Length: 289
Image (cartoon, rainbow, N blue to C red; front, top):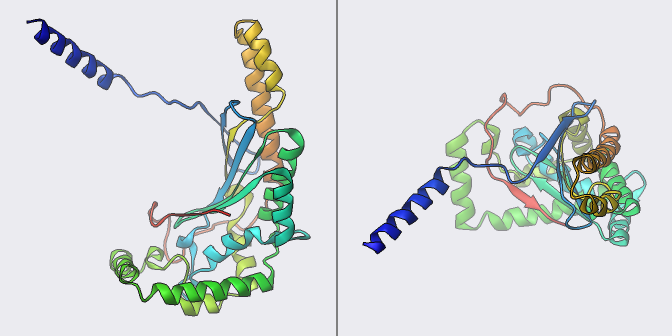
């Protein structure tokens, strides 16, 4: 009898947990910058680090059929130099402060992110590199030609593999005239025809401040380390906690302000080739470097 009572009690407990309402684990702060950029901030001080991501509606779905691959190449070359910085300069400056610059590209969105120490000097330098790379990438001709040769070779090799042939056939049948039917990296002929002017034009149209979505996660204000001890001494008194949240928000806002002010205004009405809003979520890929 006791075993039945235990089983029933256990079942009741499981049902109670399962029926409890789901709650967000991370408190996400949100605001909109004056430029129109949307900002999301998750505060965390476990490590003295800050992750900043900036994305735009500039994925493969915005390619033109005759120039498929321009969106991908634009994003790929954002890290190849900007405003007097060469590709090597960017790598060296990131190494000097222990920061990492990464790229994100899929059918809908494209952008860059940086992971940096949250100390003031390192954070400022990392965000400056990120801002300059997004604001005025140089798209060096020699780097473009190098990447075109590399990509054309990879495409020719991929076209001999059964899984690539099946995948391309599926997307053509599924999406037909929609831009999602295009190969995100482009075709051999379209890649060979890409020019630096194509990249500059795509960047000008799609990488604008009002389209940006900025996400910050981590330690946004070094003054909070002192406040953590103060809060512990005062038993996490509400006014101390509120001051901490205000400082974190202010630190995040300053970092965002630096980024957003650096972004070009762009042109209104960035749209997908041959379609309106389109669907989301097809063929995502993340680039690390």
